[in-house]
Structures are given as C-alpha cells and as structure tokens.
Image (cartoon, rainbow, N blue to C red; front, side):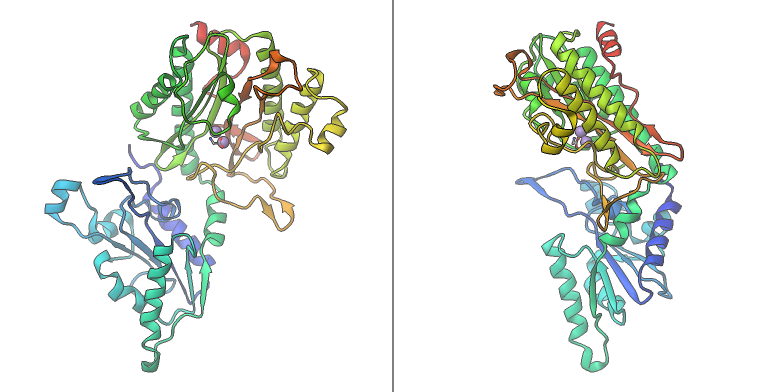
Length: 439
Ligand code: GLY
Ligand code: MN
Ligand code: MN
C-alpha cells in the first residue's frame, strides 16, 4: 500500500514541533520495540504512533532526535545499518543513507553508534523533551546518556537541567488532521464500511461469530489493510451487551441481533465502525423499537459535531434522545430531567458517545482545556457511538427486552460547516439494513 502522506509533510511536522520547542532544547523519540509473542515468533511490528507521526519510518530499533538550530542538521535519525546478509533473512533495511534520501532527514547515523553520538548532541541543551515514563527501558537509556554528560562536567560539559514530557506539544498537533491524513482515514473508513457490508450480507443462522470476523478480515486484507485497528468485536445476542467482547466464538442464532465493532488500520490510521443487525435479516418489534432510539441519538449527536460546539455537546445530545427513548418505551420511570440528573439511564448506557480518532483508535489530545470542554475545530476527528444495552439479567424490565445490545458508530471529521462522515458507506437505517441483507 503506497504511502499517501507526502514525505514533506513529515518534515513540516518536525519543523512545527521544533518551532514549539525551547530554542536550546532537544527532543528524543524512540521507535516502538519489537515484542516476543512466543519463543522465536514476534508480534507483527507496529510503529509507535508518535514516532510514525514525525517520521513515517516503519522500522524498529530507531531513534529520532530533533535539535533546533543544530548546524549540521536539525532532524537526525539513528537506524539500523544496511546488511545484505541480514536483509536476505529479514527483509530490506533503509539504512542511514536511505533515511536521508528517502525520508528527508537532515542527518542519520547507525543505531549501533547512538551511545557515542547522542550524548554530544544533548550536551549544552538546557531542556530534553522525551516520552517521559512511557517505557522504563527508554527512561533508563536517557538517564545513561545524561550520566555520560554529567561525568564530564569537570571538563566543562553542560548537562541539561530539565526533562520535559514531549506529549504535551506533540499530542496537540496530532489532534488536528491534515488533508492528507483525512484522505487516509477516509480510505480506511471506506474499507471498513465495505467489510461491514460483507459481514451483514453473509450473516446466517448456523454460523459462528468468528465466521463474521473472518469476513471483515477478508475485506481489510484485500485492500492492503493488514491489521485491524483493535481486536474486532462480534457479539451475537446478549454478547452484544458486553462492551469489549472479543471471544467471538458463540453460534449466531436466528432471532438475535449481532453487534459488530470493527475497523481496519491503514498506514497506521484507525477506523472504528459499529453496526448492529438481525442474524435473520429482519428486526423483531423490540429490537426495532430500541434500534430507532439509538439511531435517533446518533443522528442528534452527529448534528452536534460542528465548529464552536464543545466536546461534550454530541454526548449530551445523544444522552437526551436515549433517555427519552427509554422513558417512552417504559424501560425508565420519571421525567427526562430527573433521569438525566440521577443518571438512572446508566444501566442501559454506561459509556461516552465517542473519542478522538487518528493514529490511535482512542487517539491523543485533551478533551478539556483547564476545566472547560474542548471546543470543536475543523480537522478534529472523532467517533460518534451511542448505544443501549439491556442486560440479560435485568429483572427491572420485561423479559422481552432482555439481552438486546445495540451500538451504532461512525467516524467523523469536523469541517467548516459541520462534519463529514467517513464511514457512511455501510447502511444503518432499518430499511437499508434489511434491504442489504435481503439482497
Ligand atoms: N472499538 C473501540 C471503541 O469503539 O471505542
Ligand atoms: Mn468501536
Ligand atoms: Mn469507538
């Protein structure tokens, strides 16, 4: 799959970060470590999201150093050297020369030399930005580099005085998606929508939840999205009430709904879609009644995703519709205001209506600035995912409602006028779902 974020955009991000850093500082950021799955088998490698954002460089055993004002180059990459013998076994390595030529770094060195070179780059800088506390092994390496400088103070070396978490600066940048990022996210959304359509069409009595998981993976892979953004949730019947159900091993039953929460990852960008549909292709009256409430809540929340509204407004809009719907169906007593005030809706709706979306499925970025909810601005990407879950053992409601779990989730990006839905390629009205499944 071709990289569609241009190389120069990564350079622009590094520039922007350096512009926000103190002038006599350095930022140090490691690639993700490789992790053993069992014995000689590694987990598939996934680059660290922050490192990916600033480099687009997909190898492990690499470190980025950003050194504003450094004469011989400000953006420096340490990475593995080329090695024809190793590459014969493990595949192509970019190497330091390739990192400069193909990825636009100003300077690059073999990772094997980092302990000799990096302390000299840190020396004389008063502040070090790095992912403080994220990985104890990397914390120790930074301390080791600082010790090298401290050991030379009597020869006139200046160790830095401040260690600062890099995340504050970087994660605010990641919250605002560029046109190129939105393009990749839209493509991921489109692939995931197609996968959900395929699963809907192939749902049938007698299959297992994992059969539908297989259909999703088929479409992801077919389009070059080799990984999911998170483990797929395929919950038939009451399993749809378990928010993070990933066992996906139960038989699908005629008369039940199935809730699928799944999205592919494309070029490290996540998509995140939930659809809920009847195994048989036809909703029952109770399923229909609850589904219409969740759908109306989702529309109300999407309507509230627009510039100048704040982060919590879509949630508040969904909550009102869901709670009023529960009252209208006789599942909750009292008035809307009472139910909202005493949170009596919580047994049926216990999660937030969404989260930021980007390189991480639950993406970075503050939801509040000080005590105030963050105001939505063009370029911010988020999910909108209200749901209703009637626990199978909830004896406060009539048996006909029990064990129904419904969530509807789309990915949207705030635009100047409102928002753009990146995942509208998969139906969500009852009529459209039933029509697709009858097809
Ligand atoms: N699939 C995780 C979520 O919807 O947040
Ligand atoms: Mn989801
Ligand atoms: Mn989500």
